[in-house]
Image (cartoon, rainbow, N blue to C red; front, side, top):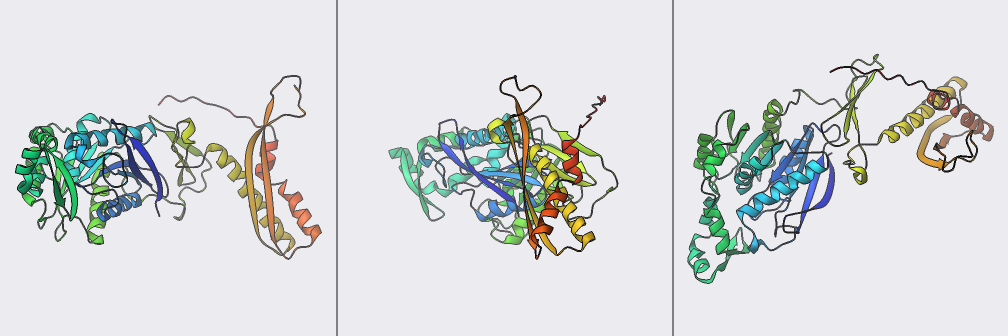
Length: 413
C-alpha cells in the first residue's frame, strides 16, 4: 500500500492549498504532479485511483485542491484558468523544495489544459500527459453559455455544474479568452506528450484530443480509452490509465524497464557485500543497493529532507538490532534453549561524556546506542541472563566497540 502525507501549500495569494502526496512502498523512481478537472478535487475517484496505480509503479504522486475547491482556502469566484496554472507552478516548486521535483505532469479534463500551460514554467518537467482534456480552456464555456448574458449584465452569476452551484464572474470569462493561443503553447511544449481520451467522452469530445495531438510535435503518443467515461468512474479504466502512463513515461524519465525490486523478491548478487549509494542533484534522499536489494535513506524535513525513508543513524540502529536478534537465535538454537522470539529496540542519542580522555574539554559528547531486549519463551532467569550476555557478543556490537578503519578512495566519474 502507498504511504500518504497530507499538508498545505501556500499559493501566490497566500491561500493554503490542501495537498496529498502518495509515496510508493520502496524507492521513488520519479515524481508526478496530478491536476484534477474543473470544479473537482483531489478526492475524485479518477485522481485517487490513477495516483494509486502510479505509486504501484514506483512514482510519488502529488495531487491538491485548486484555490476555492475541496479543502483549499480561497473563493472559487475569484479564480481563473490563469490562477489554476499558477497554483500548479507553486505546487511543483514546493515538491522541488522537498527534493522531489516533478518530472511528469498529468492533467485530467481542464487540468490537462492547465498542465500544458504550466509546463513552460517548469524546466525540470520531462514529460506531460493529458486525460480527457480540451485543447482550448474556453471549451468549458458550454457549461454556462446560457448564463453568459447574466454574467455580462451583473458581472457574475450562479451556475450549476455537476449539480453544485458555483459563482462565475466576468473576469473568469475574460481570462479564458486570453488563453486562445493554447495550440501555440502545445507546439512549443518541447516535451514528450501523451494524449489519453475516450472516443465515448460526452463531456469533452474526442475532437479535442485530435486538436491537441495535431498541435503537438513529436515525440507524441495517443491512446484511446475505449469504453471509458469522462470521469473514469470504472476502476479498471483508471488502472489502465495508470499502467499506460507508467510504461510510457519510463521511456522519457530515464527509468529502467521491468519490475521494481522489493524486499519480498528473491535477492540478486547476494554474495556481493558491497553497499552502493546514489544521491541525485537535489535533496537528501539517497538510493542504496546491497546484495541485489534496493532501499533508501533520507533526513527530516527540518533540515531539508523529505522524511520518505529512514535516516542513516536509523540504519545503524537497525544493524545492531537485527544482528542482536540473529545472534540470540543462533545461540538459543545451539544450546537448545526454549526461546520463542525476541524483540530488540535501539535508540541513538548524543550524550555528554562523563568519563573520557579529554574531559577537560567542555561540551564533549559521544554517541550512545540504547538497546532494549525482550526475550519470549519459557526460560529460566539464568537462561535469560545468559542470552543478554551473549547479545553483547553479536558481531555488529563488537564492530561498533572496536577501532574502525574507514578508507576513502576518490574515483573520477
